[in-house]
Image 1 (cartoon, helix red, strand yellow):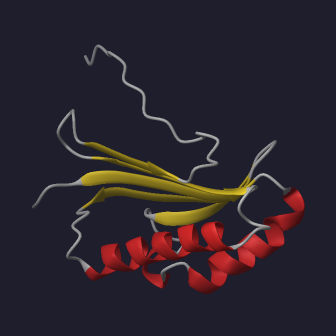
Image 2 (tube, helix red, strand yellow):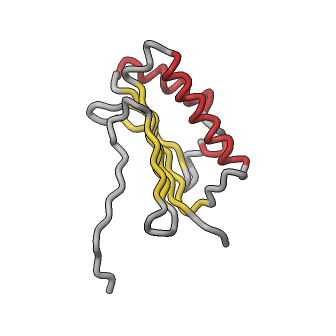
Length: 130
């Protein structure tokens, strides 16, 4: 059992010419535990009108800081943010966004790099389930 969350993150660039560099960085550094595209929890490429990158999805996951796979993901995020802070070329065009929704209504965690486009969002609606 245990407390479960839905987690999504995006790592992207707004410069299409930098997509191959970002792809190489993700391929070489993203935690292998989460990189399997054949799984429900996955890392998939995104190529939209003005962003190119990766979309990470983990549904129904125990997102506990003490778990090795969560620590590995968090270490990757720290390294990615350090790259943005230290690299003049990546800083203006690369971005990162993270959202975790817990089981409780008010359990929402969001994190974004300073130049994020807010392409991940949380919305609430009312539905009649019959």
